[in-house]
Length: 185
Length: 187
Image (cartoon, rainbow over all chains, first blue to last red):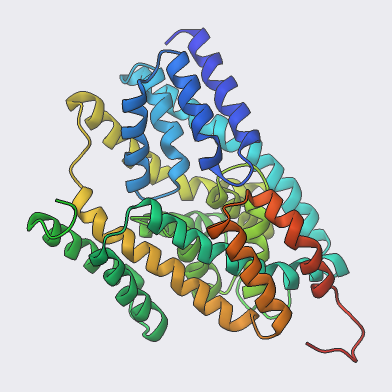
């Protein structure tokens, strides 16, 4: 991997980190264009990597790890590229959060903080519900998946079942249903 | 800190806790998992503190869940805590993603876990819905709160307004309603 590539990785993800207001997904279009322009990934590859990062556990922003991996050449240098890309994406935004959180913690008894905590709570519940709906829509929920969603919601709200077991069971159901062609042939 | 009793977590505990959150989130639902662990299980934050932190982390640039890990880490252990929580959240997922990426470029096909995912995504969505229901029971006790909730939901899920714009619209009302007032008007 050339020094030029390292600089390109640092510049791209360092910039996207600061621009990603509202979450990592907001800069995906930019990331795709730049990775294509830099000759790292075709649009199809980018879409596949996006699917992989969505499916893997952890934050979906880890698509940057994969873009860095390919930029570095997928070998050992690829791993170096992956690490650089991940750090470049995490560090600038993390620093802003750090400063904000310090300020927030020092204002423990301030009126404005109480106002934010009380007033933003209903807004956040609205946002959380909205994000559930948006994910379901973009994941192209079929009837079977909506039924599974409804049952799992009931279990999560009305019982004390371990959520991990429910997610595991749902995965098993999806696997069986997929193999029999009941969902998404 | 009011309403919370817990021993202050150490760096290792922060890292392991966020590692657990990350690994539990197969198929998504990271916010719901964070709440499940940070608020319900560890009692590190009150419900309102967590919810406001979540929105602050959404407003700031960066991946929301990484931001939240930093936010929680800073609360207990400053910059070292932020690094530990963040590293805990992404270290193992980075290894998993790299392994999957290696497979993808070596065999030029996406690993075959799509069917499993078709079951897990509904569960992750369900967890997000359940989180909205549970937190809603606690903080939607009055008409203005319900109005704020409905407005935010409609703006983001139906009208699809960008986050910042919807906050410019709803935020002033939320702050005005949430501003602490002298005793006579308890909500």
